[in-house]
Image 1 (tube, rainbow, N blue to C red):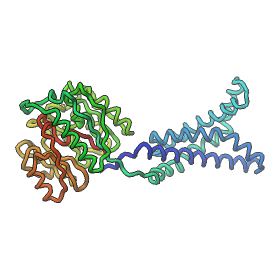
Image 2: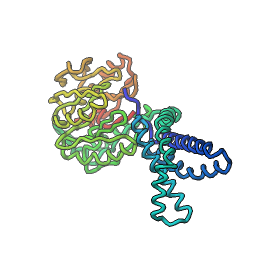
Image 3: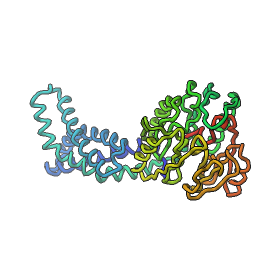
Image 4: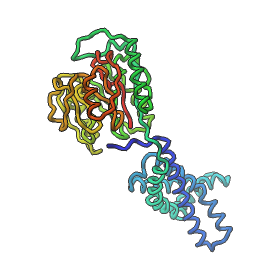
Length: 403
């Protein structure tokens, strides 16, 4: 179970606290040290404060930027931030002193800069490193806790294209799709997510991409990491551009599957730290290899599963909140791969969206499965997605949930 990515506002507030308070600690320590060594006179205190003020303000800004970029998550990141920030801030402080004095830059000013960096400002630079490693890291962790916001539960969705009926199909016979009914069903699906507390965000419509409503295939979320896919159908590869921009705007880190690798998000089923990936018509071995290389350092185990009887793995199996994998037996080729497996009585009952620890979203075309899951103690929310099911879609395909 992964902690939701902190919102940008939360990270920004924590970064500002870290940067400015750490710089204040450095400023106070350096001024106090020189104040004592210069006889503890009032004039010396004022002069020292003025001398280091520009450098300290510069350090505050630089450390804030470093914190926002995640430097204070590790001790070595904090050390680098302190060292680079201390040197750069000292240089900016000297530059400000020269410019504010009205003196033109000269060789003498350059010599003064280097002399200061290796002399008077050296204590400031060392102090920046020490403070970043101690106060900075402690402040970063504490500030994130103090500024803790209610975790956002975001659902990314994408409006249906007017060309929806032209969408790709592989395992079904093409039948007419009622575009007006599809719009109504999509609205109902979005309303159901909103009613369950999800903040629903629309990705810009892509009318020239008939399958774009099936947004799940374009990105897979792992904590604060968004993996942009490489759709197996060439006609769908243009869908990823707007999705990439949207997840990046949410402050998520972004990784990508590159050609010749192909990967559809509908082939990726996450159960704890195990990631099952369907090897079928839309996802190839190279795509799975790249996903494994991305996720293994994060502690995930990628398990490849052959899929031949359906378009995607998640057309065949999904998981309940407790990690039990459910599926329609006639379509599941390798149920033993999943450990805990529960057969459901209807084909469309194999796809559920987890809404919370005790609630799931299910297609209304699987009433027997709804009864089964309710009997297991789950609250079952049903929606009609029949027009999307005609195109090998299901309830999972129509959104990407970010928790």
